[in-house]
Image 1 (cartoon, rainbow, N blue to C red):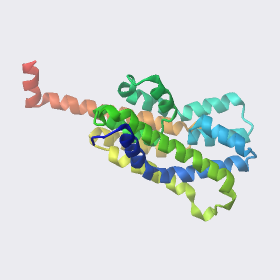
Image 2 (cartoon, one colour; image 1 turned 30 degrees about the horizontal axis):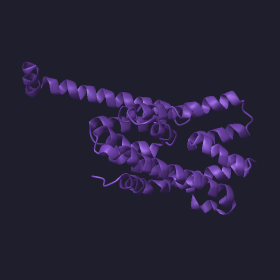
Image 3 (cartoon, rainbow, N blue to C red; image 1 turned 90 degrees about the vertical axis):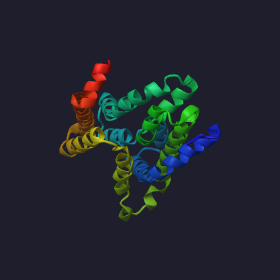
Image 4 (tube, helix red, strand yellow; image 1 turned 135 degrees about the vertical axis):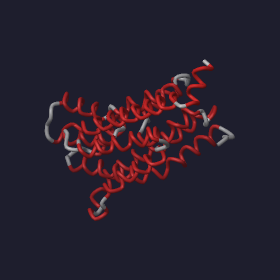
Length: 246
C-alpha cells in the first residue's frame, strides 16, 4: 500500500504485527515467572531480557543457570538456539544493506521471528517503497515492546496467574499464524512439511538441535523442489523457445 509519510508506514507496521503479540505475551509471562521462581531478582531478570531479547534462548539459559552449568555451555547453547537469526539476517540483508547504520544496528537487535515473517517478502519485492525501513521499524518496535512488558508483568504479577490459563498453548498458535500465509507454492509447502516433520521427530535432541536440524532440512527441501521445478520448466516447449532466443 502507498504510504503518505514515515509515521504512516511505522504505524501500519505496528498494527500489522499487533495480533501476533497474543502468542508472545504468554511466553514472556512464563519467562518472568520462571526467572523469579529460580531466585533471580526483578532487576537482573529485566536486564537479562533487555540484553538477550530472545525468548527461547533466555528460557534455556535460565534453566542452565538453575542447574549450575558452566558459563561457556550456557553461551554455546544460546548461540545454537539462535542460529536461525543468522538465516533471517542473510535473507533480508540485500534489502537493508543500503540503509544507514543508525537504522540497521537497532533494527538488527530487534529482529524477531514475527517481524521477519511479516517483512521478508515485502522487503524483497520492494512493495514497501521508500518507507520500507519505517514499516519494518514499526513491526520490530511493537514486538520488542510486547516482549519486554510481558516479561516485566511475569516478574511482578506471575504469582497471581492461575495455572488453569495454560499460557503455553498460545505460543505455537502464533507461529502457525505466521507460517500459513507464507506458503505460496510447492517449494514453501515442501519446506514447511519437511521442516515440521523433522521438528517432531527430533524434538528430544539436546540443546534444541531439533529446531536447527528442522530448519536446515526445510531449507534443503525447498531448494530441491525449486530446482526441480526450474529444470522441468526448461524442458517444456516454452523453455526450448527461451533457450533458442538466447
